[in-house]
Image (cartoon, rainbow, N blue to C red; front, side, top):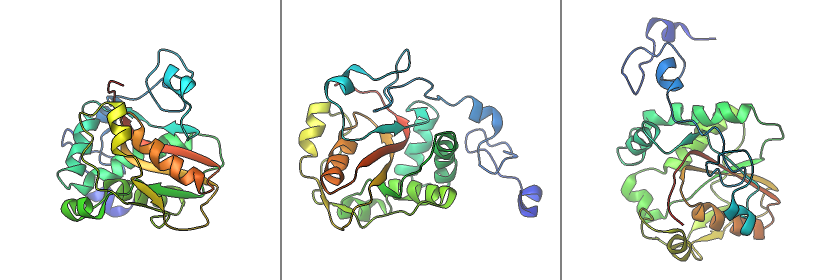
Length: 229
């Protein structure tokens, strides 16, 4: 039920600026026009012409079971994520996480036992002031009642930014970048991030947690970017 304050002062859409008339700050027309990821690889969320598993995941199965991603990394979702990630506009978190939560409610249970946001190196987090993956995970935790675990894994290397890197470069960049820092590791985990590009970050993190005892690892993100292998 909407609160009286929302009825008197409805939210404004973050895209068009009009009253949203919804609990999330996206009006219905703008939400309907988002670049939804309708058909994609079940494991890595790569867009496909028909449901199935992409050739890359068939040749080299990733160390995670499934990817849940509501949107392609295209306008205006990419714009909202940039405003969050580089502009520090935390107001973007709720509507972005809401897109993911809506998709997750449609999936069969059980849900994971823990949400693990992709950790930033402490230097990068100090410079940015926050971890966008953690902000998204916290919002999902409030919505889905799943605990966030920031103690399970830490980033040991301040890897260079991966924008513009091909898949093989990203894998080299992430070699030994994560280490498990707490035990026991829950058997069922969801890794949280804002954008999946080649999936190399999620592969490195999932491999690390899988070796520590996680039996089922899922990838949850807001958008899927398309980059050359």
